[in-house]
Amino acid sequence: MLTWNHALTIDAPAATVYPWLIQMGDSRAAFYSVTFIENVFCATSGACRYVNADRVHPEWQNPAKGAQGMIMDYVVIADYEPGQYVLATASDKMPFKWTWLWYLQPVDANTTRLIVRHRVAFPPGAPKAAIDGVFDLGFVMERAMMLGIQARAEGRFPSPIEEPLGALIWLLVLAMGVACGVQFLRTGDVMVLSAGLDTIIVLFLLTYLQPPLVWRLVLLVAVAGSLVLASMRPWRRMAPGGTQS
Image 1 (spheres, rainbow, N blue to C red):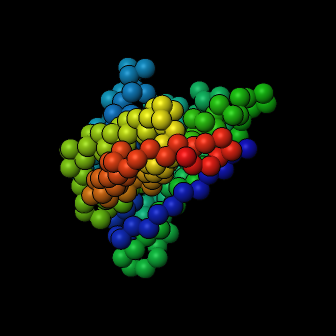
Image 2: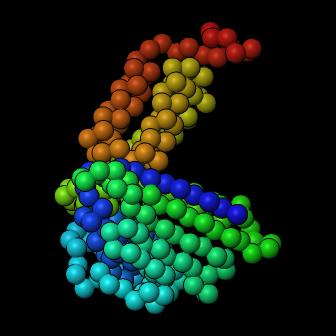
């Protein structure tokens, strides 16, 4: 009932990428994603605390198939083939069936296509719209996970300040967007409206594409500049009928 394919290219051979995949899980290497968001979910159960690994752990490379939990005991590692794929499935504790596959497709000797595939089957009467919403949030987290895998396989390890600084940039852009909305409602200034639309576009890029930190800073400066320019220009109100006055 729900299918989802997500992929990116990694400048590393499949044999280098695979060890980072097989050790993922809340009780092991975590998911290389947005840690503070992951830990918000953990806090509701008190069962785990995510700490993203920055090295390959030999002791986590041969998990027991069908027994090793990936998300507590709700999602377990069902199968894997070194250098090729890792497959996780929902356990009987989940109210729906779910397979989660990480597949490594070699492009050449030093490049790999990481393909992530989800297949979900809901039971009759399940609130599919609500579950779709959860998976939409999951897409954002998975994008961060795949970028985290890519960085580690390519030998680039995130700075400890990168995650909080990225969150701060997102919040600042959101705050500027809200300020634009309030100002437009007060003044009807179309330049402020234009700056507000810029913040929406940038928020979309920050949320779904998650560019490198330097580009996030560039986007923040661009939005701030747009807002400053809008505040410096004379008001241009929207007259009845959509014309400017």
